[in-house]
Image (tube, rainbow, N blue to C red; front, side, top):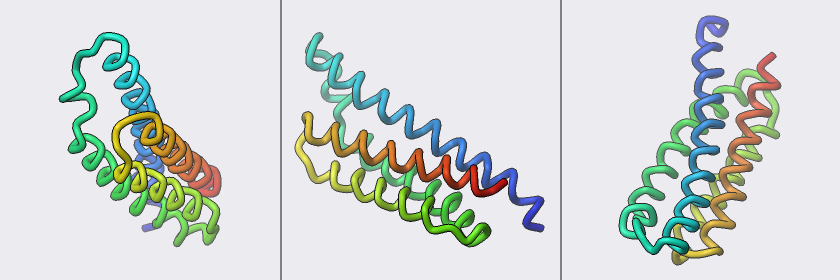
Amino acid sequence: MSNLLSPIRTRLDRAGVVLSGLCVLHCLASIVIVSALGIGGEFLLAPAIHRIGLAVALVIAAVAIGWGALTHRRAAPFVTAMTGLTFMGGALAMPHGAGEVVLTVIGVSLVSIGHFLNLRHAH
């Protein structure tokens, strides 16, 4: 049964990495577009986008990395990803700006590293 479910967990880890990259792209593009052009702030910087992104990241990380931790019994992917999710949650408490972007980028980077570690330990 575990061998049948392994591809699902692998896909979830890969989705987590892709979503982390999209999150960083969103953060950086939002700052550039809003700062340079002064447009799109009400959509690109909407708090709902950040809350939804954190919720999706939390679900994917909980399933993929939690499942991986139970399977391969290694704490590093879990601890790394949960630290990243903590940074992402902290970013939600910050006002829009450089501080929020820094916390978010650190957070999604750590979550992505957690997914990479999880993938590596799965083989």
